[in-house]
Amino acid sequence: MENVTVNEKSVALELSKEESDKYIEENIIRTYEKLKNHTAVELALYDSKLDVKAVETGKSIYDIENPYERFLAYRNDNSLLGISFEGDVSIRTMYIFTQIFPYVRNEGREIELYKSLSSENPLDHNKLKLKFEIGDAYSHDFVYRGDTMNSCAGTVNAYIRRYGKKLPDVALEFAALTHTIGNYTPVPYKKRGVEFNSPRGFNNLKINDYWDLTLLSIYNWFLEKNGKIPKYNLRLIDVVKNTESAQMVEKWLENFKDEKGKYSWDKFVRDNFMEEFVVLVELVEGSKNAENEEIFGMPKELWDGHFDGFQDYNRPSTEEEFTQFFIRVNEAIKTRGIRMCERLLAEINN
Image 1 (cartoon, rainbow, N blue to C red):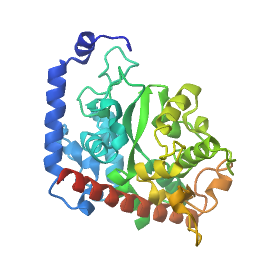
Image 2 (image 1 turned 90 degrees about the vertical axis):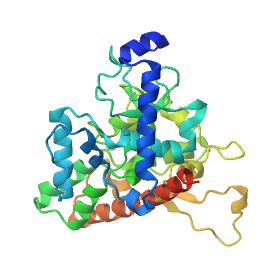
Image 3 (image 1 turned 180 degrees about the horizontal axis):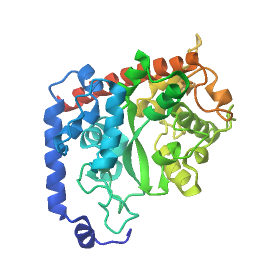
């Protein structure tokens, strides 16, 4: 499929290039109109699952008040009704990424329809044309798609198994925040099996879809690139599971260098709005920060002891640990989301 010509590609997509461009442009215009007149807080707290309303099949489930029940209804609706909508690759999310993550537009990257290079028809997994990506899957080394950094089901279900179905308010808040912009980030994707997102959560007992561990593997990569020895033995290969995917992720990470050409964890953190998920290094009096000393330390643990114990049991194991996880992740998602949306409004309203 990677050698398909433009004309053959258009036939395979069942859309001409002109039709595809017009469809995407119309979606971008509608998205802009929806976003421009809201506050940063309103945008940051918006549950992107509600965007499914526009394409619902008559089964109204999105007025459910309980956030976790709404999450379950959304997940079941996707699989049973074939809506095939995902908030982290929606037009809303992709549009926001193109406005505030400048590196996703390198090499003339634009929003495209989400394609599968592993199927005869690239729209096999996007038949209703509700999923989008940034970049051309046929010409770029990889495209950018969205990743839901902190997944809801695993930790909340683990809590329910231990303590019953009555969820505390902090768990319900997490369910409400799961599909907000502050919990989304762009990550590289090439084709099935050469990707970043899916291997983190699918049968990966080492990572188990936890964002602090994913960030830890990236932090370790930057340490090693700069000749330092990581404290914890966690590598990119532990996240993505195969060499080809790890090489793709390394190409992505090579975007983040400082003005002297040094691989920069600080630049990665800033360019990806990850400040809320990492430790801020306290500057010692007399520190020469102007000489590019790092100001961001290692990722924050989502609960105490997570980095020391993840290879033994990679879930919170006490009510206190669950509470730490929910409180920490909720605060990080909200604060990050507001910062992202403040940047967005500054960009689109200028």
